Length: 267
Length: 262
View (cartoon, rainbow over the protein chains, first blue to last red):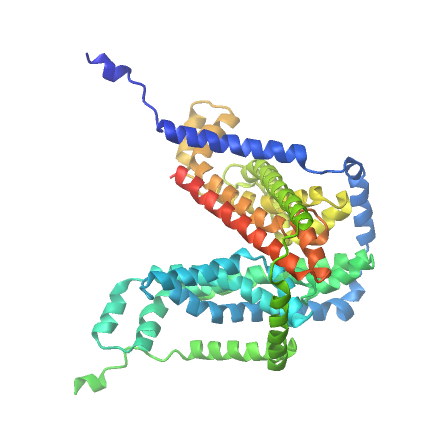
């Protein structure tokens, strides 16, 4: 009876796996269909969207270049300072958390878990929400924006830094320990050289994101160019808004070029 | 004493030390420019205690909970629809932007489009769409769709540029038409990564769809910003907790789904 083995139907997945996948696809399609049917779209607004868009661009033109020195430049510089200082602050606060979250440095599951919980909660709150909270605490202005960038970045930097630490090879550390090195030397000469490239890559990556995010923090009053955009929009000065959008675009491009340049130089 | 003559194992790295010093000096300078002082910080901490006091206990009045659930539901709708639209549009755009499959006159406009989608924050794009299509969920959906294209299409194009061309050539050698080359030569090599980008983007869209409401583009963000402006801080806390819970549930679900595909 050899044909039974030949005739057997081969399948890649177990019935349970197939069922789970089917449920997933079904759920995805269902979610899309239900959302599409219940989402509230006002069709009257949609009909004149092209006209509205044309109107918007017509109001944005000509771009108010002459407004740059008096109204945009300082706000733009402030945005850059908020992003940079916030990222630096985040790095300072994220280093200890990253150390505590790495299970080869803090071999205590409870400590790891607690550090990771702090990092997750920092990441699950959007930077605009952090900005709202800090505006309520510190009042409107750059301080709130800096703190918002810092608190949003802690989770990002801490998580990636902790993961980089966990990947450090134990060999050099054991060698230093065997030579009787005190703990600061073990960290500085054992761990630091191994994670330094990852550290700079993380810091630069985060700074790049922070520059983009700090441009909108002003919409909730946390300083920077966002506040200028908000003011111009409230006054329907779209040609000024256009100028600020161009300015943000320029800064984002420059930030990307700077990051690429530094990365090539030091990594 | 041969050890005395040996150079020290760890030479001082002066450029690095100077760079650290410069960074510290910059931090002090930036803090002074931004008017960040210790006094303001301490004053803020006092304010913070009062703020937290006004947040507690979270407001769970029935009418406000109903309003919040409506907002959360709309946020979910925005996230689902913008992800679906973004993924669907990213497939062709990413394919057209891959330089190893397409001629330069096709890839350049596509790469420019992707760069344009990426360069602005979602909230700024949302502002423009609120002007174009009015207040409401549609503006949020369109804004996050644009952001999704900027992310997925870029990474998808990069993934395609890394594929092995041998399989593509093999399919082409059988005389297969273009679409079959794509579906049998290219897609099997990049589909797993594409699904990875798509799930990541859904997660990111869910987080951002809670925010676009601040500029009037629908979802829970509008309710949240209104609560903030009315100093309704206990209700604000309820909304924040609900958002965090929603994101954590979504992350847990995604982990389950990832296990399904391993």
